[in-house]
Length: 252
Image 1 (tube, rainbow, N blue to C red):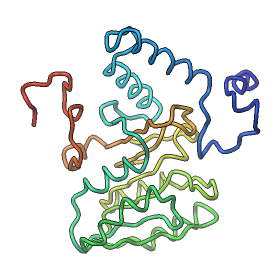
Image 2 (image 1 turned 180 degrees about the vertical axis):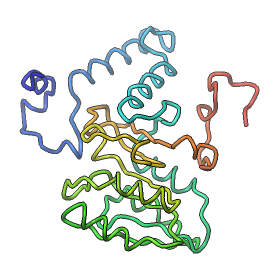
Image 3 (image 1 turned 90 degrees about the vertical axis):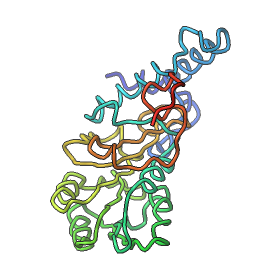
């Protein structure tokens, strides 16, 4: 792999030494060219343009990501950003007063604010202390778990320290206790190998404009197959159903 050639595909490298890839990766020429082809085709022929097929483009993106994450394409939905996905997940869960959610201490706001609404509904929010190494973190997290814990929501990689969290061990703990594992994959997806099924992640959300080097405004949400029927949809539109281009009859 010629990293010099790869670096040349990103115009930002002509102006800066860019080290903030876990924040944003400025668009590369591959992204600019693909977006130009798509928009030019749409400008020339509207939805009849050769490059414009909403269903095919969405389907191909989901196929590529499913191979990367070792899941099924129908477990992935295209959204706008991580916070949107976390809100879909949080508001769609069926929790009861007295249930508990464990969040990550000093977590990025996208995986904090979407959970606050549960406090008004009698659900307890607890935090697991951040640590300097995965073993210490896991020990602290384990101490926060009890019989009322229903959800653990953490990041794949901590946004302040860059430390990968021990997702494999957390997933095993969640399976053992019947807890849903929700992951903010923003700083991890595309940089660290992630097998959603092997880890046992129940839900995940992440953007495309970090390590995936995709465009701003594209995000992804993962819902494991066994939870597709139980997660309550909080936003329903034309594309929320099977065979979305068949507008009538309405589908339930």
